[in-house]
Length: 73
Image 1 (cartoon, helix red, strand yellow):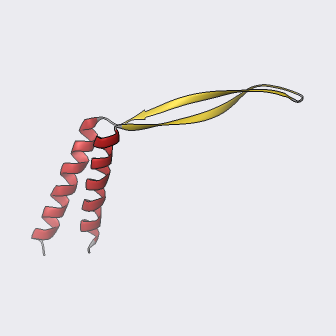
Image 2 (cartoon, one colour; image 1 turned 135 degrees about the vertical axis):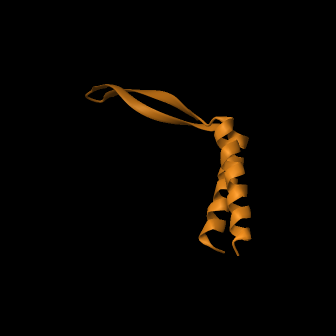
Image 3 (cartoon, rainbow, N blue to C red; image 1 turned 30 degrees about the horizontal axis):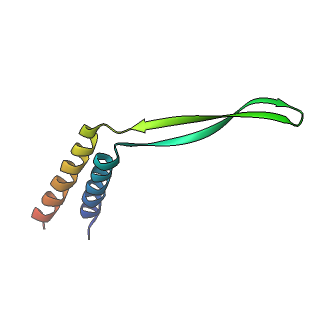
């Protein structure tokens, strides 16, 4: 497998994942108060969204790279 084929497959997989999950969330802890042995922490939830257009473009781009890499051989 050549480099273009690997890139095409990676784009297809990433595009399919972006269309399926459309983002992810993660949580961080932030220290609010720290007085001696007393600590107050706050959990903050963050979201990272992927636009569906980005996933579709990656999927179509991956297919195009695969097709073009097959034609040049």
